[in-house]
Length: 203
Image (tube, rainbow, N blue to C red):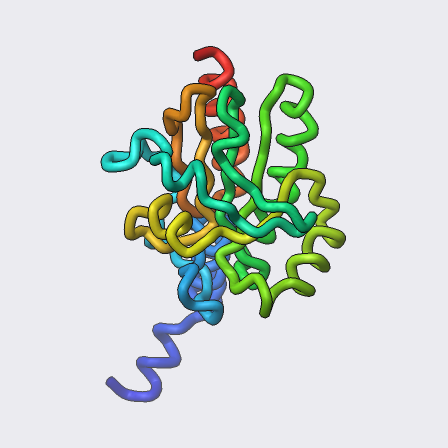
């Protein structure tokens, strides 16, 4: 193809349309990060829609009994929340979609706390290396729910091989996982999580 034809192909209109299309994909595409790779960027191939867990329908006893380190000092045991509707969020400070999701989770916590819903954010980062970053994150985003670090076996069991974050689990009072969310879409995920909380409260 000649240089002249190349120039004719990339007309100002085509360039503008391409930029707009890429912008829309970035704005509305599904966003998630790989929890094993802090350098990961957003991945439009990850699903943010809620999925019914196939292999993990309830929280296994070892996961309920595991002591996850908390920013407050004491351990976080998911089993201590038995009998309550619980939202568990797996996240990391370096994950862009996690940072976008956190303000929405803070809003949901404020809305549902009075109805007995508990919320826990478990970072997938190393607790010693990320202590200051997590502390800064909590302060910056005014997180008012329990924050800590997921033990390796807890994160691996909950993720079931899907290492994308954020991941959120809405858990009913009897320990059943009502909905699982992978990734975050600002136009869909907050409303879907809210619907899942309502479903769990109604059980």
